[in-house]
Image (tube, rainbow, N blue to C red; front, side, top):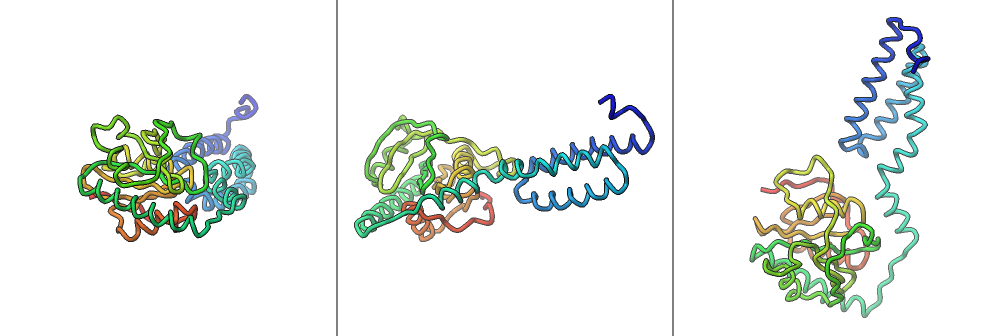
Length: 263
């Protein structure tokens, strides 16, 4: 610090104020959709680094050098979920047989039936379908069940007087493995305020893993599909069946490009 402020001149003072402003600006940018803006930021940093060097702004140039040298670490942190999904997909190949397909049809039928029964009665529900990635390190397990997926069981779990109705149900392949599970809440500041805890928990787990999450709103009776940190609100029944089937098979669903607003 002593060396940095050794000689105080007007250009030098401007140089140091510019560094402070850049630090503050980067902090604000990284708090909102950093992943979407990262490539643009890197391009701007490269141009700015070159410009500061040419203009002789030593402190500013040093700041840009530091940011650029840290870029690989920043990229790894921001895209850690996508990197984990990609590596896991390369490492593990999912195989299904003819018998699995027969069980799969029954499972999807029962799951779809249970979801729509809960929606008709406006009973809130949160159902997580595991594709390939483990979620054990992110979920606080409530009650282990290990039972076939049936609409009757789903209804009984989420009834308001059930001791485990507030948590999430975890489904792996054709079985409900646990219920009453606590999921991490999303920290995304851009989530619509009208979305409640269930939707925020669905977003939280989907931002970090490849799961598919189904949410039934007790206020509206609408069913939402959540995956890869995005929500499709009031989903079409046919789309629900298609995505549930893909998820139970262990296949990834198409990327959702917009977050629907709840009305």
